[in-house]
Length: 427
Ligand SMILES: Nc1ncnc2c1ncn2[C@@H]1O[C@H](COP(=O)(O)OP(=O)(O)OP(=O)(O)O)[C@@H](O)[C@H]1O
Ligand SMILES: [Mg+2]
Picture (cartoon, rainbow, N blue to C red):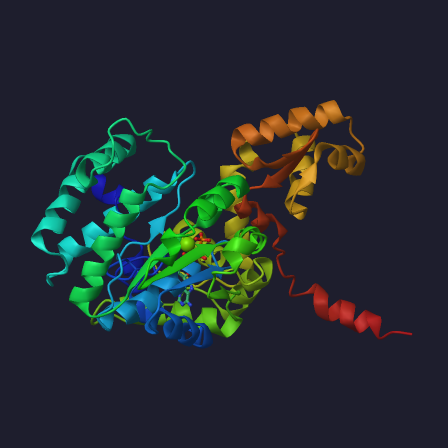
């Protein structure tokens, strides 16, 4: 029984693991091998020059969700690490509610984890054990840790852990750790902060304002990754934007690049001695590319879902129609089957067509009372197919789960098109 349930479908396609995985490329290890990274040559050279040049820097890398920001920065950091530059391997993910001290502590945590893995002696024994005792007290218990940071580096016990102002001893300890690493490695270092957009505008502004000095510590290259709004927030702070070194935009990849990435993944993940099968036609990639405006994360995720759904006993090759039918049948199982009334589904389809829409617009468009719209939305929200995107005053803006965009795919009719074309030429 268990062997019927637990099956590796990717083996049928001649590959070791899911070639449509949406995991980012990591500096070291990771599911997606680093050679699978394609394109972005100009940006790689640009960021490479900045972090390779002495004097420290602050760069913002920005772009839409899932376009490849984290992977891009990780690939550049991999070049840096291969050149002897120190960088905490795992990018440091911004967390809502962080105080400046918490950010510094988390950065020290990332530095320590990487030093532990490194076979070079980057810190002298005293600094290493100070850092170790700081991290070892329980890295997850951040408040406890801030207290411990005080004990280790010697600031007053009564100091408030939520203090928004960064303490000079914290800064000094951080600086001494970094300067030792820089001296011992013979290179400056790189720190990558990921997903700045997880903080609210207010939090971003307050944190960056308070950490302005921290981000100017000598010999450190700071890379911040965020979405477009992060770029606006930082630009609107003159004191901060004046210290930024560069701002790099990460756009969607081209159709050919995405095709190359998928082929490369199959090539790299192939099982020795087996032929691999790329399970879709070019047309499939084209319709997904257009549906998602080139967003690689959504394209990979659509393929992954369709292939997993479709594969039973042998490898399948999807064409435009089978892909569309499969993704729609996933929607049917996941969502439609739970929608209580056809009217609620009409509401959902209206939401799917828009980036965001209010109850009022829905009521106007569909000609149904607002109170009914609210009930339909409550039902849809409960099933998990719509969510509240934002609220301004009384207006609530609703969006559909991204996978619902599959509803917009159209099956191609092979019979009708030539007939229509013929008709159009008739007088
Ligand atoms: N240039 C590229 N070459 C090969 N694969 C890429 C490239 N860019 C992105 N990918 C792949 O696309 C997926 C999304 O990339 P990534 O996670 O880096 O995006 P992101 O912009 O950081 O997303 P998020 O906004 O969610 O943080 C990953 O599976 C990654 O491996
Ligand atoms: Mg990312």
